Length: 259
Image (cartoon, rainbow, N blue to C red; front, top):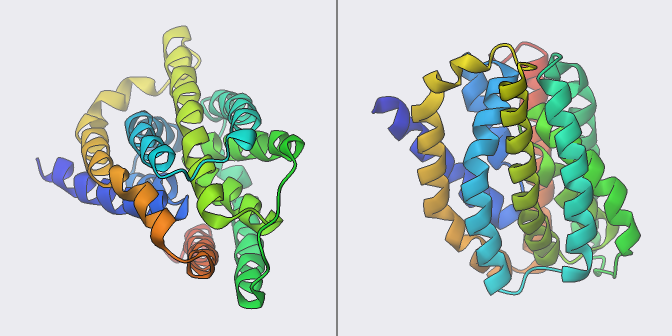
């Protein structure tokens, strides 16, 4: 019960941040699981299993509040699924921490640029739909391998490229539902086919996953409202600062300063 309550709080807080700013649920949840000694592949599978439910609720909230750019959603979701499936398959066979330094560097660079954009109050612009393919594929791959990262990669890229923050966040969160379903299905396939040798220990983390699901579902319905009501400049600053904080946190983990 203590484990369930702990991850209930983690799930609620992480989803509140993710729904409002378009990132951090996977990164926060995975970081806590890894801190408890859960192997990277199990942490990623657990988080994505929980996200199947939380992203569905978050997507519904963003659609209700008209935060979704439907022109960009389909290519983004399709590319994300392809990248996510590939990343999940790779993660179940190799160590996922190999590419972490590159992810940290990207988050830091995007954070600096987005804060700069907010300070100069650059107006949003219309993004080409073809640009969603590489963005979604890279974001999906990094999300599966890192146990999180779709929002921080994709939302930051869309905002940095000039998309209106609330629509970048709403579109990213809605596309994430399809990504998490695909990644979770890939983990199940790897389990069934025997590709994932350590998958048997997943049942040991059922309480943690349950807490992430229930906590996330509690916070998800407020996602669209927060993103819609917060002023564009404030939202842009918040995304940039959060990216820098995530990059700093993961950088300290890689350096061994944080366990």
